[in-house]
Amino acid sequence: MINKLTLSVCALVIGTSSYAQAKQPEFAAHHCKAGEINAQHYRNFPAALEEAQNRLQGLAAVKQARENKAADISVMGISASHKYIIPVVFHVYGTVHNGDTVNDAVIIDALYKTNEDFQGQTADFADIDPEFTGVKDSLNVEFRLAELDPEGNPTSGIIYHPQSSGAGNYSSSDVKNDHWDNYKYMNVYIQNDLYADGVTNNSGVAWYPDSGMSDDGLARVTYNGAYLGTNTDENFRSVLTHEFGHFLDLIHTFEGGCKRGAAKRCGKTGDKNCDTPQQNSWQMNPGDGGILNCLGETINWQNFMAYSDQYANYTQDQVDRMVNGLASPARQSLWSASNLVATGTNY
Ligand SMILES: [Zn+2]
Image (tube, rainbow, N blue to C red):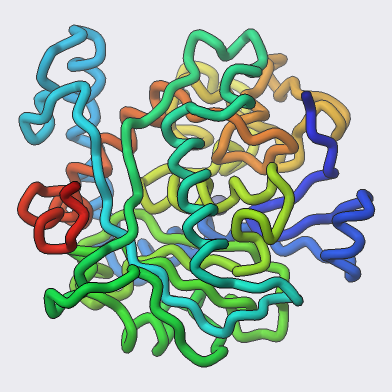
């Protein structure tokens, strides 16, 4: 059941379907900028790069726990069957994005479906390219709207603001001014023009875990309301899942393209995972002319961290990387038992 909607990216659709034409009258190719903005972040802040490198040292323990089928993953002493609950607050700027309405119902539905993506509960998860049935995996996580605000008052977890733009820019004043404690809440900013450049079809962008950003109130996912849940098609709405993947430390599977001679250095190429083959480019779907990379390997074109025509799965290595990311200084307090009580998400 390949949903043919010519490719789209973290950001855009160069579509030929009637849907895409209706939604994207202008030809554009605004890709997800997560790769470049995080690289820029590491150039600007050496401490952030050091933290990212240190974080990877924990990955071996996570993989070992999986290998041993350990009852307790040695990371943070949590059980292998642990369910992570992440309190989320949505900051919504303007309620009409490219003609689509952004309201509580749309957000609740979008978040529900993103949880299904992470938990492997979609029909697409069962419809994986056979080469990847052995490595596809899910993360036992639930992103849950906060029910208590930073002052301890009841909240819907969805806060509306006047129309604004630029929340995809690193030092966005909206992000800084409106954030809720980054160590207690995952902050998601919904705007239509992510970079305040007049372009309204960029779909999203996010930064990897970094305590410097959390200290400054800048940790975030930024997303376009026009691509939330039912405001877009069933496949493209999974770009929200893609951005949440970045938030938990996942890299694009196509990052850096495909390098010959690098087959044995899979931990250093592409998304730095070994069960996600390198991709020649971001545009690799069956309908794009082939799914074999420069080494002749079949790519996991249905991966959430690619630009897929049929978003369907994460892999075991990606899940390990997310578990490790969840244990990082910038994320570990989010799902702590005391924080779930503080944010009203402990039900
Ligand atoms: Zn991305």
